[in-house]
Image 1 (tube, rainbow, N blue to C red):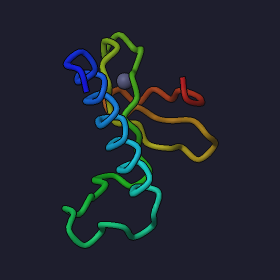
Image 2: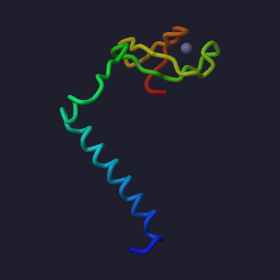
Image 3: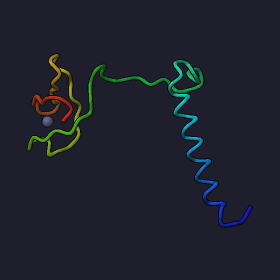
Image 4: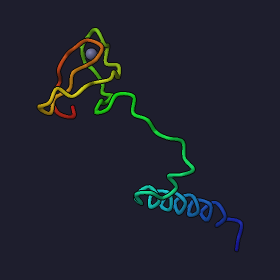
Length: 83
Ligand SMILES: [Zn+2]
């Protein structure tokens, strides 16, 4: 193996590792015992960018209002969809 191909082999290994971890994440219970528990502080909440002046386009926690729209927990503005 020539020295020129080594960086490419490294890249292949990185991509391969990413594919393996991606596949492991698809498995329902793979590795669940040895990982730190992920707790969602606000069930159903989403961190979305708020375009209101008060929020200054910063990302704030948005809570679902029930009809597919989200309410900013910082300024109370309801925004629609995933925009
Ligand atoms: Zn806001």
